[in-house]
Amino acid sequence: MKDIEGMITFTYHEDIEAADRFYGETLGLERVMDRDWVKIFKLGRDSHVGLVDSERGYLKPSEAKPVMLTIIVEDAEEWHRELTEKGVETNHPPKEAGEIHMKGFLTWDPSGYVIEVLEFLTKPYGE
Image (cartoon, rainbow, N blue to C red; front, side, top):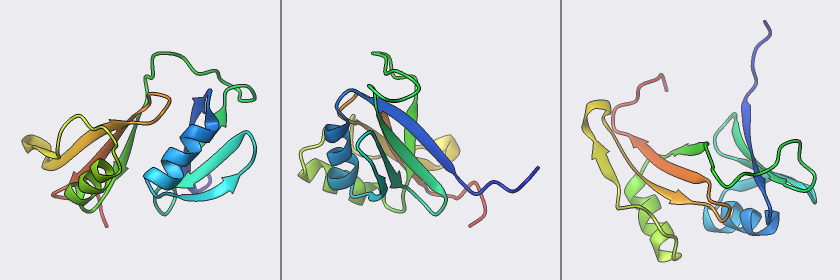
């Protein structure tokens, strides 16, 4: 097999403009592609989230959102503080999950996708 260069997780939205504002302005992610029906935001070096207009995308959005986007950050407390200052609802302040030595919280994008903001207190992978 050839080397993998990265990954994009695509989500499907009835209101792509609201999703675009949330990922770009509220979360502060860098938009690396901007078309009428698809927007792609950079999460990390080789990971991205794509927003697709439900009218033009291959898949259609459903009421149930069986996908959770996890954003791995250096400081979950800072992310929580900044998002709550912007009026973003979260499930709770960052909490530590002992056995896997991480802490985080959840929020939701305008279409209802769950976004987990996660800080690994001990990295489970190489840096």
